[in-house]
Length: 116
View 1 (cartoon, rainbow, N blue to C red):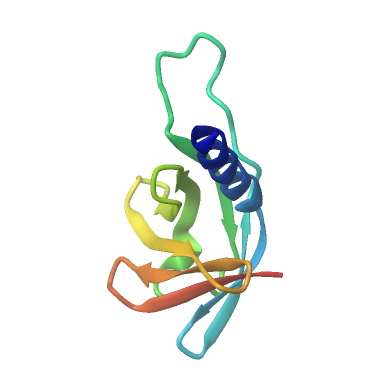
View 2: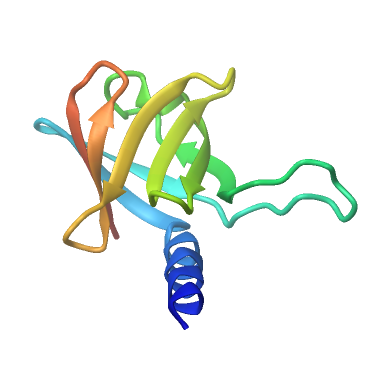
């Protein structure tokens, strides 16, 4: 019963991650879209402990966040990570209070992703 609840919470979090967000960094605001999760091909030897997908970050995003290309949600700790095209971490965030995410950039600047 407890394992079922934990599995449901992890699936609910990954299902809620995709969508359109307003990214707030200090006084700057831009738009970010997290695409639906992509799955591993059938028979793949790669196992993923979460969900992952593509990112569309609008060109006006500050602190290099306009370079975001991929997102990943770890089901073990519900941490959302945005990566650039080379796999470098741009942002890490945990679920926030307002249907979004709160965290920081790789440089340590506080950031919020608020669902639009």
